[in-house]
Image (tube, rainbow, N blue to C red):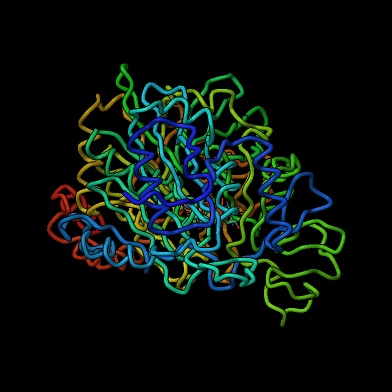
Length: 605
Ligand code: GTP
Ligand code: SPV
Ligand code: MN
C-alpha cells in the first residue's frame, strides 16, 4: 500500500484493523487535505461550529444559546427518493418499490465519483452508536464525511465520539457509512456556504451492510445513521433476525389512574410523528412523555412482548407549523439552545421564524437569504416547507425517564396514519394482527415537502416505510406477518389506524388535531383495557361520537361525526387503488394480504 502523507491519517485513536484499513482506503480514494477522528467533545463542537461560522455556512443566533442558522443550496432541501438505491445482488431483493442497480456497477460508478472528491477539504471519521451504548449488542456505525455540518449534526442526532470508539474495541462490527458532498476544491478556490453536487446518489448495499452517499448535505441524505442505517440497513437486519425497524415515534401515555401504556406510531414524513410524540393532552389527568419521534427498533422480550428502542439521540423536526399552541414541548426543547436550524427564516434581532410561528415579524431574512416581509405573499414562504430544527433529545421537558433504557419499553398499541382529506376515519381499530398488517400495508398519504416531488399527490406508503424499506416491499409485509406469529396473540400490540387530516367540503380540517389527539389516545387505551365500546364496520372498529371524550372541546358534533364516518362509496372507490398497489408489489405479496382485500370487498358489499 502506498503510504499517503495525509495529516491526521496516522493519528488513529483505535487499533480496530477493519476500521483502520477502511479509513486508509477511503482517504486514498478521496484525497482530502487532512483526516480528523472525531471525539464528540464540546471542544470539537466549538471548533467546528466556529469553522462553519467563518465559512459563512452558519450564522450564530443571538437569541438562542449555542444555536445556529443555516441555509442549504436551494436544490438540496429534502430527501431525493429518485436518487436512492438498494443495490442487492438480485434486483428482485430490492423489489418493485426501490431503485436498483447492480452492486458491482454502482461500486464502480461511485468509486469514480469519490475519486478525489474530498480534495481541498477535511475528512472526518465519526464513530457513532444507534441506540444506547450500554446495550448488550451496541449498534455501531462509522461515518466518514467531508462536511462539518454533518459532523455537528451527528453530534446531536447520535451518540458519537470517543466513548463509542472505545466500546468498539478492536473487533466490533460496524456499518461503514461513506459520505461526500461531492464538491472538491482546487487550490485557492473559494468554498460556497453549502457545498453539494448536482449528481446525487444515496446508496445501500444490503448484503455487505454498507452505505455510500454522494452529492447532498441534507439530513436524510447525509446524516447516515438516520434513515440509511436505522431504517434501510436495519430493516434488512431486522428481517434476518426477527425484529422490526420502523418509521415510528414512541410515546408513554399515563392515565389519571396511573396506568402506563407505551404507544408506537408510524406516519409518513411530515405527517405528525414529532407532534404526537410530544403531545400535551387537553384532557385532565392524562400525561404524554416522549421516547422518540422518528424511528423505533422493536424486538421481542423474554416475556413475549414487543419492546421498542429509539436509536436516535436528537430530533430532526419539521419547523413550519411548530408553535406554542401546536407543539409547546418542541418550542421548550429548542429554548435549551444547542440547536441547528436549516432553511428557516431569520429575524433582524437574531432569532428564527417560520410559517405558523407566533408573532409574525415585519421583516425577515428568508431561507433563500432575501429580505422579505412575510405579509407579502408574492415573496413565497419565508421558511422552506421542509425546513428543520436539529436539537438534542435530552432538552425535551417531557422526555420519559426510560428513553435510553437499552431494554426498551413494551408496546401496547401500534398506530398507522396518513394525511388523507377523505375516506380514512379519525380512528379505527384492527380486528387482529393480520388485519392490522393489512391496514399498514394499504396506508396512503398525500405527499409532503419532506421528499423532492409533487406535494399533495396520494400514494401508498406501507407502514410509512415506502422510502425506507431496504428490501422487497412484499417480503417486508410477509415479515410483518411472521413477526405476528412469533408471540401470543394476546401479547402483541393492538393495531389502530388514525387520520388527523380529514377535511370538510369547504377544505377545513374536521378534527382540531395536535393536543386534542389525546382524546383519540384515550379511546385507544380504553379499548386496550376493555373499557370502551366500538362499532364494527367494514374497515375496522370505530368509536361513535359519544364514545370519544369531547369534554371541553369546542367542536361541532357533525364535524366529529364526519371525521369518524365510513362512506361506503368512498371505500368502494378505494378498492381498485389498493388492488393496483398490490399488483405493483407483485409476486412477493403474501397471500394473506389478498385474503384481507377480498374480505374487505365482501364486507363493503
Ligand atoms: P418527519 O420528521 O418528516 O418524519 O415528520 P413527522 O411525522 O415527525 O411530522 P411532524 O410531527 O413534524 O408534522 C409535520 C407537519 O404536520 C407540521 O407542520 C405539523 O404542524 C403538522 N401536524 C402535526 N400534527 C398535526 C395534527 O394533528 N393536525 C394537523 N392539522 N396538522 C398536524
Ligand atoms: C423524513 O423525511 O421522514 C425525516 C427527515 O424524518 S429526514 O431525516 O431527512 O429523512
Ligand atoms: Mn421521518
